[in-house]
Length: 410
Image (cartoon, rainbow, N blue to C red; front, side, top):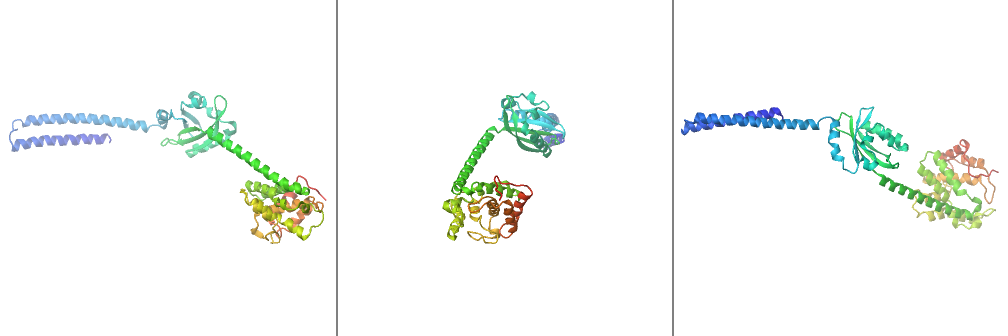
C-alpha cells in the first residue's frame, strides 16, 4: 500500500463509523423513544470517539507507510550500497572468498573483499583493495590470459575462469573465479566468488602424470615387440619406426589431426608384427623366394591381424596391419580390397612402407634409393596407391626435404 491508499482507508472508516453512530442512535430514539433526551449527548460522544480513533489510525498507517518507504529505498538504492552493506554479512563465514567490483568500461575498482581472504591467501582486505593487487598476484604464466578473460567476462555481464593466485608465503593456489553482474546496477557493479580448487588440480595432475607414465609404458612395450621382429630380420632394422615416422609426417602434410598422426606412428611400429610367425630364413634369404615361401611371407598380414585384433587400441591398428599390402586396384593381398574399402590409415602406411623398403637395403638387393622410390609411387598413384597420400609424400621429400634417419643410396 502507499500513502494515498492509507488516507482513503481512514476516510472510509470515519464515514462508516459516523453513519453508524448517527443512524443507530436516531433509529433507537425515533422508534423506541428511550434515548430521546440523551440522543444529542450520545451522538456527540460517539462522534468524538470515532474522530479520535480515525486520527490515531491515520498516524499509525502513515508511520507504517514511512517504514515501507525506507525499506524500499534501502533495497532499491545504489548497487554499491547493496554490495557493501548486505553481501558481507551473507558471505563472511562461507568457506569461499567473495568480492565486489565496480566497472565503468575502462577502470576496474574493488569495492569489497571478504575478510576470510587472510585465512585463504594470507592478505588483509586493505591490501586487496589497493589498485593493481589482483594483477600482481596472478601467476605470470596465467596473467595475460586471465586479464583477457576478465575483460570478456565483464563485457558479457558475467562468467568464470581458472588461474593461479600467489599466497603471501610465496606458493600459488588454483582458483575458480566466478563473476556475475548485480541486477539493477546499470551494468557497473559485479559480485564474484573465488573457490580454491588446488585439491582438484593436484588430483588432475596426478592423473595426467599417471597417464603419461602409462603411455610411455605402452609405447615401450610396442617398441619392444617391434624390436623382437627386427631381431628375426636384422636387414630391416629400424624399418618399422621409419615407416611410422614417415606415415605420421604424411598425415600431417594431409592436414589430419594429431591423434591420427600418433596412431599412425604406433601402426608403423606394429604393421609387420605378423612376421614373427614367418621362419627367419625366409626373411633373410638372399636369393629369390619360391612361390611357397612367398605365400608364407605374405601370411604376415593376416597373422599380424590375428595378434593385434584383441588389443583395444584407440586406433584401428589390427586392420591397418591387415590391409597394408592391399592396393587401390584390388591387386593386393590378403583380401584383394580396393579403393575406399581400404582404410585411409592403411593407405598411408602402404606408401610409407613402399618408400622405406625401396630406399633401404634388403637381403636380396641393395637399396634402390629414394629417387626410385618416389618415381614408383608417382608412377602408380591412383592405380596402386592413393593419389592424395602420394602427393603428400612427394611434397615432403621434394619440397620440404624430408629425410629418413638412415637412407642408403645406390
